Amino acid sequence: MTGTSHEVASRTAATLDRTAAEGRAALVGYLPVGFPDVDASIEAARAMVDAGVDVVELGVPYSDPVMDGPLIQRAVEHALAGGVRVRDTLRAVEAVAATGAPVLVMTYWNPVVRYGVEAFARDIAAAGGAGLITPDLIPDEAGEWLEASDRHGLDRVFLVAPSSTTERLSLTARAARGFVYAASTMGVTGTRASVGADAERLVADTRRGGAERVCVGLGVSTAEQAAEVGRYADGVIVGSAFVRPLVEASTAAEGRDGLAEVVRDLAEGVRTARG
Image (cartoon, rainbow, N blue to C red; front, side, top):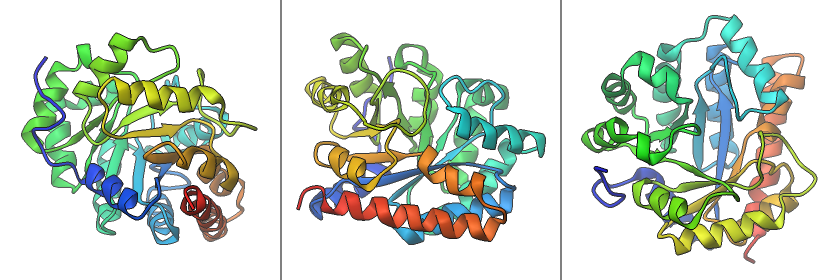
């Protein structure tokens, strides 16, 4: 396998290190590009940063989202029906990266292959993106991406789950740059009543496997959960809870206001976690 996590400076890692120095975890916020339309999704992502998100994940709409829960699927289907494509994601990355927050593109692997791995890496880097989160790509099958991400100075965020073996955790930790994404529960995304004890154990195991930074996602929806996860993780990843206000709003402006309120609430949870 080519590439190691230490060859290229990571803007995402630098942000996580800065928030750690402030005595807190980072708040990582996900939104799909193109909901309710491309311009409105850009405005929503910028509003997230203004309200307290440290790292932004922008999702490439994809027709077979194996990890996404019903709320995100609904938003993604709407974006696809509106004709949203990878070029729209590049425009969104450029606009959101202008805030100064690291912007990671969350994408299933098939759209990257269709676009061309080298071309995708080149264009994400040119747009000011920090890297990719690839939920359905494992490091042992990522040779082309490892090389392209090294050439273009991009983060590569791979996922681990409670079912991951010790060997898999170590392999993922070595290949990742930026952070390792710990999926707190088995299954799809969505808000949950509790995040579960598996998440804390998974973070500890992933660190033992060599990961310098581990962020937890899948299920965080309240300030209390954000505080719980923020006590042991380097970052708290929130998706469905940020998408919900946009889906439920009657106008884009109302959705943005609702989103900002939720972000502020969870940002406060993260900030009080280690107090």
